Amino acid sequence: MSKWTQAEADKFVADLIGEFGLIVTRRQVETLASEKGLPFPRFIIDNTAARAGRGVFDMSYFRQGDRAQQLAVQEPDLAPALAAQVVPMAALRQKKLETTVDNLVPRRDELYVPFGFFKDLKKVISSRIFYPTFITGLSGNGKTTMVEQVCADLGRECIRVNISIETDEDDLIGGNTLVDGNIVYREGPVLMAMRRGSVLLIDECDRGSNKLMCLQAIMEGKPYLNKKTGEVVHPAAGFNIIATANTKGRGTEDGRFIAAQMIDEAFLERFAITVEQDFPDIKIEKKIVINKMKELGCLDEEFGDKLVTWAEIIRKTFQEGGVDELISTRRLLHIVKAFHMFRDRIKAIELCINRFDDDTKSAFKDLYNKVDAPEVNPDPAPAPVSLTPVSEEVPF
Figure 1 (tube, rainbow, N blue to C red):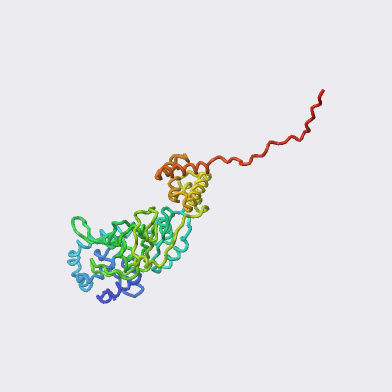
Figure 2: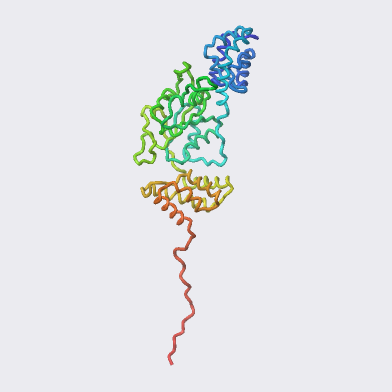
């Protein structure tokens, strides 16, 4: 067999999508054709309109019912003329996709210290089961970093979307934009993650509005009908959604996270599990701080130990209602960076706690001074008592 029929081409494209998703590599195309005993898939490999980058092809091109493509497969002599008709759209598609087909696996941090839900999240993502997970916890305790480092460990792509009150359907799903003077449709990060089988990280989920409801069907792991293009996008194997937030979607009464919004119950219900992320324990946090000092070349284990102890005391006081602020793990790392630049413990701390009000800042500084004070023996040994008998004075 040296020539493809349209039926064979359609079946092969369907098999490709079912096996690898809509974005495939040249090797995947050639390997599948060889395994099925089919001729060399030149109608894909040589098709510049379907090319999504070097050695990468977008199978959605073949699912659009493009009559020109069908004729090009059946009648090779018409291919050059038909290709000229689709060059503008192909160029725009290629330009759009070339910005999104780079390796999206997060960079692995060799100094990262796993803690909390890390091992369990790794099991969730490595299972490749669609299992939306909601991670909540105070700011600066490593929620986002944990998701990224799990993906880095597993070699999984992670597409991060930061949510704000202004985030809408166009930002998430996609919408029209201006490219080289032409209005074209640009696909959003959510559909990109679905096509690629990536982990979609919805960061600061509780900062969004009810416009997040456009994700309802996607949150169920079902195919999505893009009403702007008419295309049905099927989630590739491995696609998952992880959300992070400072609240559980119910806002806060203490005003700490004033931008946090109430999230619709129907949206929250679509998350399979909710994880409450706390700060790392004192042993883990000290290792995190020391690793950062090593990375920056400013290792001072005594300072690192005192910083962690100081932060732990403040957090316990915060939990008991004694103070309104706390020192996060992120802020400890800010202090380490300042220490690296200025080589002054007190200056590094002062610069990094200036964001607090005067009373809190003063209390935090005083506490650190006590933690870092020279050790004084609280019960000094009494002066030695002479064991030599004292002679009684003999009166004359």
